[in-house]
Length: 466
Image 1 (cartoon, one colour):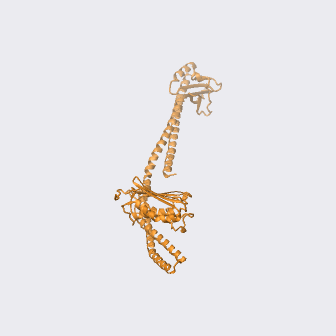
Image 2 (cartoon, helix red, strand yellow):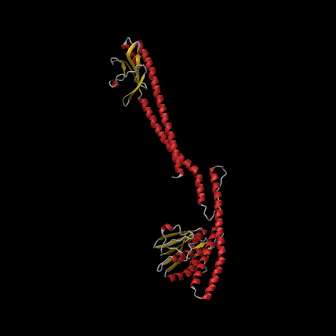
Image 3 (cartoon, helix red, strand yellow):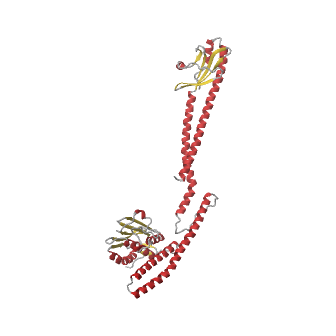
């Protein structure tokens, strides 16, 4: 999981927990306050009604009439009133809507210590009562119980609506939090994306590039500065390695040339000496490897800058046809080459010749007798495309990304016996990159390989004399 996604999940999770705690707390506090206000209202009404009953107890008919005037059913809290005899269970005064009178239970007796009793009575969907029951007058009228009630159905409905609205508000807040979290995380991690983009544009062949360091003294500036210091150390290390390779290759050229001359002289004096012939072949192979290493070191150090001259591919490939035709014929291979006259590339003629010589030599080397090697070059828009196809042993798919590595040889196809050191394709790739081109391979074991090279076309092509 990416850092951006983890931050987004954490941000949303914290927002959800805080929102849920706030919503639940708000709902519970509001519910408690509203129900508590109902209880205070009932307590005040019951005190007034008790006083009225004490004054009118001698005339129950008048008391009932007065209580009916006091208790109305059209208020926000429709009220009920009850004065009952706990000993006989009879109601002295009972004012309640007629349609629920029969379903009202017997009066609930308060505890002997005289504490009021609050209770809830739910008769139907739209009848939900909050009741307060107390002893009426234990001293003067023992056994009488007085009860006041309020229909709080509307209040309960408002509380349910409050819960629904709170849940919807919480969901909307989470949605907005997701959007805001995505914006904040994207904005916060944008410097990381910029750093990644800048680092991806830095290649091993050009470690001189550095990240832009802003003036703000923040963590991103420290990170950019640390990466720049690391790039400086890597550049110095690569320079030392490249310098060592170039120096070693340069120092080996003279001893190898001396050895080759002396072996050739000794071979000329002794005639056909198999040992000297093998030794000369090894020295020649080492000389080619040293020259290849020196060329790679120069390209790595960027001391080899290709020219932008127009190079006719028909001439370059024609020269290579003459060079490799004899080798292909001796090996029993069909060697065919096709190139359009309009195929011109911009670059260094000798390097381009070396590029395709390595690719064609590689195709001839790993194609068994009776196979074929075909080279087709054509102009494709602003580039020149050259395909070198063979019917050789092929390359396993898992090795396609490694065949351009230096000194890499597959165990079953590339070995020292074949005469290669594993540098030909690496040199070819370096020349292609030096010319701002592309090289790719398509291959299947037992069915051959196709190397595709694309190089920028020359902006203006010289006219060939008619």
